[in-house]
Image (cartoon, rainbow, N blue to C red):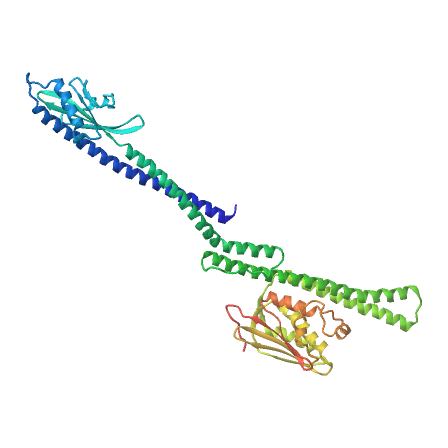
Length: 473
């Protein structure tokens, strides 16, 4: 069952219960008020008739000093025919509670008389021949006789009005239920409209349309739910996009890796088969063996780089206090006597929180890339400066430079700007990918500034810990 139908059904049931219970108590309360009024009138009428009987009894001539039964009957007939008793039934009984006079149609039941005592009036509601009466009784003291006077007042109309009231209220309730049902249908549809919009949006997203968003039609809790749903959809779309990019990157990685293996392996197998199948002169034999050795070393370097990347992704950093002087001394020992390129070192002393061996790997890769991108005889600058939030390393070259589009791809595995130059230096496009993973462990990232034809600058910032850096003077 739809949620709107549930709201509609619950509203109708609640409305029916409220009107039903309220109508019952309302009609019943009106009925009780009418019955109390009729009861008072019946008792008042009994008192009036009793007074009239006593007055009439005093005016009756008495031969024996006592009221005779014949006189009682005569007074009773007179009272019944008088205006005071119009529409009323009465009965007069003697001391033994035996009827002396009774109106036609008076109930023969004498159970009420058993409750009548001196100076008291009793009453009850009885049903006789599908009609309702209020029966009253009282004792009459007249001429040394104690008689009983009973009256019956027809209150069938009160019961009829109650039945009619229930019927009218029932019809009114049904009408109100119909009207409220129509109103609640539109109200339920209006209340559940945001849910329907969310359902449609969720269904479209399930079909693959992750750009679908639900329109916000209110500012209440449902509007907040719609806003949260749209935020979730944005995050989901971004995650799916990231997954697609990751899958694409893996596919590109596998394709590049296969290509990087296929090319040297094909040449190695060809030269090896040549050495195995035919006899070559010394020069060709040396060239073939040298090519096999060179490509083998390149495959070895590529394998080691891949292994370093895998290890770096799973590695847990063991950072320690490291003196920047140690890193630059290591670089000077490697590149200080380089005859092909002119290396310039400029740095400020400082102690940072890092793993020295990993930072050495990053700086070596950046320095090697700077050499590959530069012509012999040009300068390569390796710098280090203190900043407010960390220590900034920079490696600058004055080589061929990198375009803006290639800067966004250069850190991907196996991507090479100049493949011929990289392969001539046994490169495989894995150095910068390894640097990115190592810097990620240090809560840092690689920043690239490059201008084609002018050179490039690779920078990264090692953040200071909460204790701050210790400067060395």
